[in-house]
Image (cartoon, rainbow, N blue to C red):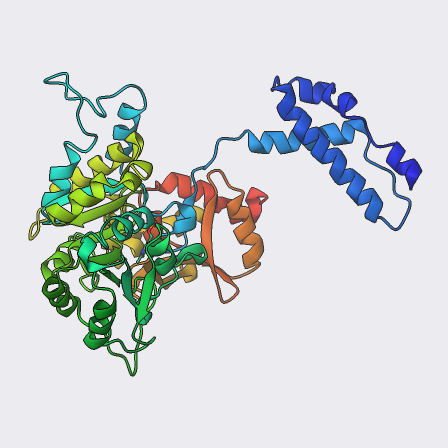
Length: 464
Ligand SMILES: *Cc1c(COP(=O)(O)O)cnc(C)c1O
């Protein structure tokens, strides 16, 4: 054993190896990965029960080289979404429009982010976007931060407890709306992260107006929080206070009502059962918070839409500076807002010209025709074409399904999934009942030749 440890390659010998030197990388960086590789080799030897030999210098250099090659590939990489989940958080949620991409490129260098070109004076980064968003959401005013959680945090930190006479600040939230979103994050924890405690009221299945009233008696300076059940639904012995009734209570007690909508729908091109920002505001929410990259179809961003007074308080809070949106996000968001502005309800242009909305709107017949073309090109039997169910995902319309069309691979589904993940670009499909389903609804915007080239890897003759 000690003998084997003594034979471990030396850091400097590996560092000097031509396979690592030819990368022309910073020495301190390479040294870190060489040390890690040798340490891992030492661990392996210590745990080995036989008398195995250590890797030699060449082998360790090769291992470090492979690791560095992997880390120095630009990420995230483009992948094709064949999962049927339109807003797939692991795949970057809403795919951006070409116009948004162009806007980002325009902004990468120096740009007039906080400058008024006509006067040469300092301006606000939201000068142009703010009135546009406010008008689109039918709100008095709007503000932008870097994601939906940040919008919630800002509203829940800035708005409660502003009347000193009304006692300590708090957030009042129904137990039926204590929602956990992705990656174990909880709405109540995010709301409280700025230091304002959350007071839970009601029970899991039933919360009454009197529960909120009793909480406001104890915490008269609180804000009411309403969280949209964006990823689950409740049925059975259930009572909820309607948002409009909660808004009446908030007005009577002169406290703000924050509504965390999550998805940020504008209505056009989105199934009607998803609440819109404007509807929440009409119901009487003081501020509605939501994401830019869900049903809005834009970049990661957090939006606040609501009354001028409340938005102004949020904008001036120190957290607003810590959470502000960067120039690339703002550029993409502005392009997205322009696409919504060009949507004309009750005409042929009622669907915003954005990938998410096109994916939702594609007719099943179009998908079926495309499936047929793909099968023809690939030499696949039309038996592989199946009726599928796509979902919107990304915390909107829990359980809602959109009829779709998929190509199905029945044999060696896991192996086929791995082959497609290794394609260039990689394609992600859905495993379902030991079959691999490649849903065409979410492959909007991918041209047929690319798709045929990728799927051809599943044909035996292509040697996949
Ligand atoms: C998605 C979601 C959030 C968080 O938004 P991010 O943009 O992911 O930070 C908060 N609340 C609800 C209800 C959501 O659906």
